[in-house]
Amino acid sequence: MSERLERGLQALRAEVDAKVKTFFSSCVHCGICAESCLFFTETGDPRYTPIYKTLPLRKIWKEEYTFWGKLSKSLGLTQSLTEDDLKNWEPLVYDGCTLCGRCSMVCPMGIDIASIIQKVKVGLATADYSPNDLVQATQRAVELGSPMGIKLPALKAQIKHVEDDIGLTVPMDIEGAEYMALLSSMEIINFPEYLESLTRIFHQAGVSWTLCSDAFEATNSGLQIGNNAIAAQLVERVVAGAEKLKVKSVISPECGHAYAAIRWNGPNYIGRPYSFKVIHILELLDELKQSGRLKTKGKDNTRLTFHDPCQIVRRGGVEAQPHQLLGSVAENFVEMTENGHMNWCCGGGGGVSSIERAEGLRVKVFSRKKSQLDELNVDKIVTACANCRLVMEEGLEENDMDIPIVGLTEVIAEQLDESNS
Ligand code: SF4
Ligand code: SF4
Image (cartoon, rainbow, N blue to C red; front, side, top):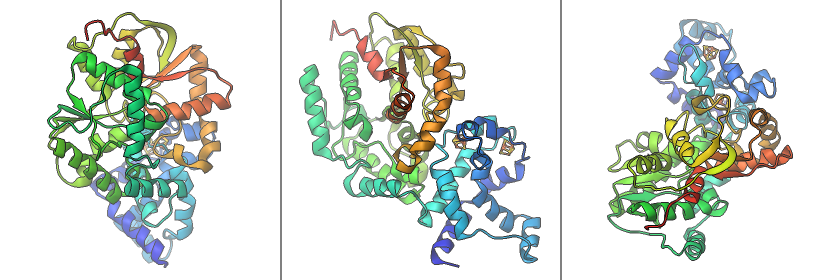
């Protein structure tokens, strides 16, 4: 057995916890999860069924934790996991699963299939079976502080543009501020309008906030590739920044997996609770709106819809807030037929958008979002994740669909009543 395979097997064995044992023993092989996964529905390829993607871990569980598995192994009747298995599952798991969690919602046995697929990633990453694009992004995150290689001077340049445009200061390294905001690389480079909107809204609502020069990046490539040690290191960076500035809360930006990483997985990665709260920007905006601090005037009258980012809405539980917020500033807001926690994924979450070789598959599975949009005939799409936004822009372009996509924070800022601020 090669050293690489041994490493992968050990990592997979370590991932077989009580939850995994319960999940695998409960699966009744009904196949219901298949119809919930856009990688299966849009390709018809049975290898993309959710439960099939978990097979490497299932093999280990069966062979080492079940009576019949142990017996067949001792009689030489089963074939143990091979290096070829790891090689074959690498594209299935990394390119063909966004960890959207839609499959977990429909399983009649309550199996959280997405969380098992994440565990398969851990085994693959340990055995060095991960896409090169993700490996490089992870290296950049560790060495430079951001998966896209964005360093502080690039952020400062964007801040300068924002400040010049709106005539307000973007606070940086303010000790004792109530909130510390994080940004994703994509927001800094592709969508600086998010920072601009945030600054205007917080100024109007009188929110005490700051960015942190040591910890501005929200993206967690460790989670995306399945390297828990790196994921913990990136979370520690945010924790150190928040503790240094003594903030009460950290704001997760319009980025799906960043929210999952810092809000739900972070304390588990680092093995201790935080000394601060984590809040998603949409939760905070909703709180500010409900309490009357965030004031808007008028409404956008474009026919528009909302794409629910999986990690914020379905996996993250921030479901009512975006729909309430959008309803309050949009006159012609129409919901997708499947919306909220059952909306379909954009096809590029969980790191899939960073994998160049997955482009063809991404575009193919976008047909699901296209069908949803075709039903509505909208003039604008609103979402709350920079990654969803880029992936959908790619899909719309491929399908010659000329529909602009904007962030929800931006839509709210457009209706901001700044008369008394
Ligand atoms: S998490 Fe989403 S993409 Fe992954 S297998 Fe389940 S439904 Fe498919
Ligand atoms: S829906 Fe649940 S029980 Fe049915 S095959 Fe999928 S994982 Fe197994």
